[in-house]
Structure formats: structure tokens, C-alpha cells
Image (cartoon, rainbow, N blue to C red):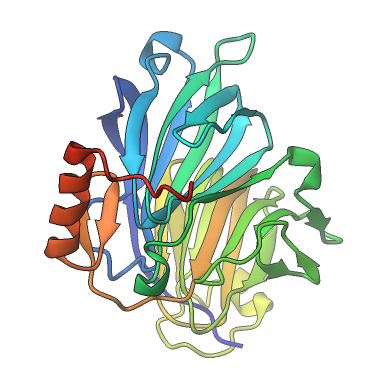
Length: 301
């Protein structure tokens, strides 16, 4: 087993999106190679309704998948196909935009006004860019949670982990999407597929990730004795990992909760403008021309 070195740690940047939603962007609208097949991760966390209630009115998507994971409050959605619903605490919506969809997402806080969730964008391979749109709506109780003897808990949204498979299926990049809690002062090894790109996003507590620049097996006792470099990561920290087959983390005094996401890179050209991601600028121009002339949506629905 080899520890994945920490390639870099960055903080999420405050961003204004939609009709005036204040959120924290962990990554997006920059270099795509490092996170391939993922494009963007937004942390929409707020306790001021005036900072999120305007929401994300009607807008198009093509060529990507959007993954919405809600922790507090709700997100009401509707689309051009006639679908509508509410994503609540613990729920997941995995939307494959495919050939094209126009939708809106309107957040609402809990009784205390709190809103918290994440939206991750995943790219589609060229062979599936124009596939028919579809949804996978997963209610919170249907997302399995596994735990270890030391109190570590992991919600498995997608992929296989510790013998449990998440409910989201049929995703081309074969991603793994985990919500991980490590108890205070605990050290934990978490397996990650060797051929996948991987990142962690810390959203509660803090801790440190083992940074083994020489990718070799490092016993846990060596980590605890200080023989391995530890890189600190606090709330709203994005941790991008290099190659290896496991991540090692040591939680701080308050414990540590983070998303751990990995997926096989597509290694395809990316032409990206706003909510549409294709493989060439010609395909982008065609998509926006279709938006203007009313032929953007696939009549198959």
C-alpha cells in the first residue's frame, strides 16, 4: 500500500452565482486536468436567507452531470422535461444533463435559516455528451453508512467502499463519492483507486493528511511518531492528492468531516463555457446557437 502525497491544499473562494447566491467555490472554471473527470465543486453554506434565497433560476446544461448533496435546508428543482421535486437533508440528486436540459434550483433554509450542501460537476465522455437526460434521486435513508471500530463513519453516495456500494449507478467515470467523519485525534487509512484522480474537501473540524513524498508503505505508528510529514487542512480546505492507493488522515481535537471524491480521468479535450461543457469550440458554438433558435432540447425528452 502506498500513501497518496498531498499535491496541494487551497482554500475555497467566495463566489457569487445564480441570481445572487453567495457560496464558496472549492475549484472550477480553471485547469481541468488535475481534477478530471470533475469540473467544479461548490459549497453552498449560509445562515443568511438573503444570501441564497434568489437561487439559481432557469438555466441550461449540456455535456455534464451535476451532483447535489444537501446537509441542511432544501433545494427545490424543476426542469424543461416536467420533472420537479425537493432535495432535503441527507438527500442526493445525480442529474445527467446529457444532450441538454433547462432547469432551476431554488434553495430554502431550515427553521433556523441555515442552508448547507454541495454541488459537484462531473464531465461526460464524448460518447455520452448527447445521451438522453436522466435523474437519480436518492433519499437520505437510502445512502448507506458504514462505520469502523474506532468510530470512523462513512456515507457511501457512489462507488464501493468497505464492502458497501452506494446507490448511484451507471456513471461512466466510475466515481467514488464519500462523506467521511473521523473522530477526534484518530488516525485513519482510507483506500483510493490507484488509477483515479482524488481530492478531499474539509467542511467540519480540522486535521492533517500524511504527505508521503516517497510513495511507499508507511505504518500508522510511524505517522504517530512524527516520521512522516503531516499537512494541515482546516474547514473549507481542498486537498488535491497525487498518485497512490490510500489516503492517511489524522483528525484534530474536534474531529474531522470531509468529502473524499475520486474518479477515472477521461483525458479528453474540454471546451467549456458557463453551464455547457463539450469537446470542441465548434460544439460549444452549436449548443449556444441551438439555445437561441429553440432547438437545444432533444425532442425525445
